[in-house]
Image (cartoon, rainbow, N blue to C red):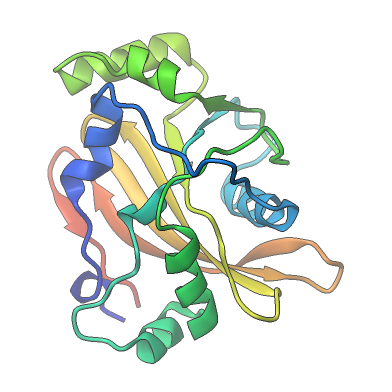
Length: 211
């Protein structure tokens, strides 16, 4: 599967949100359900362990920043190639039309902190992104970066879900992944499959093909 042909991501948005001292707009009176926190927790625990010192998670969900929009694939084909269901894909778009505020209801293997919007604005207040990240590492010396997550798009069976996870680790360092989360026989949620959608490094900024 050639992911780079299918998805469009505003790369300036990927890092500009952290660099700008802006205030996130949350859905008033809205909150995530318990099942969503279970799914997001499974996504965060994928690739992390108890040896990780600390995870810093942006309190704001990603919103409509990444909607799995394809230029040349219908939703049925796109969902199949992502390993998701069409309903999960549609639900992902519906629930992520704007940002929501996460609560401290995540269950992760490593310790985590929610990065409030006001504190993020105080840290990322310089025109130089390098300085911003120096300020971040001063305040969070045990963290490797900032994680942002979407709300899960849950299919009609409530057994599978599609989640977008983004990791920012520096002025020119970051990645975005799509994760398919499935409920296991014991009721716990786990990652069934994942796709690296984009990655940024000092040398290049590309959307990554996935087989």
